[in-house]
Image: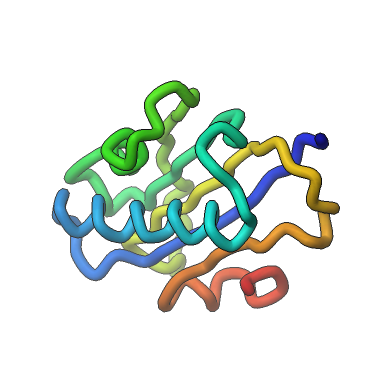
Length: 120
């Protein structure tokens, strides 16, 4: 087993706790499913949110999915002029037998334009 990292992002339509929970849960679930992972494969997960999101912690969605024994942390993205608004990003450290090139990074909806080079 190797330690790998997998990325993902989603743009929210609004800054509302229920919507954030729904979208972040969908993103995290897609990351796990597309890479054949289960919660036990997670080492840690970083969540970042753009400065215009402040209604809830993105990591709360992971806890509600039952990911309760994995270290999670939330941080704020840099406030860069012209950056896509209302974006939550995930950087998950995982244990996996996948080669680095086999990792599927997940960018949902409009966030797919952020990383066309790695979004699948």
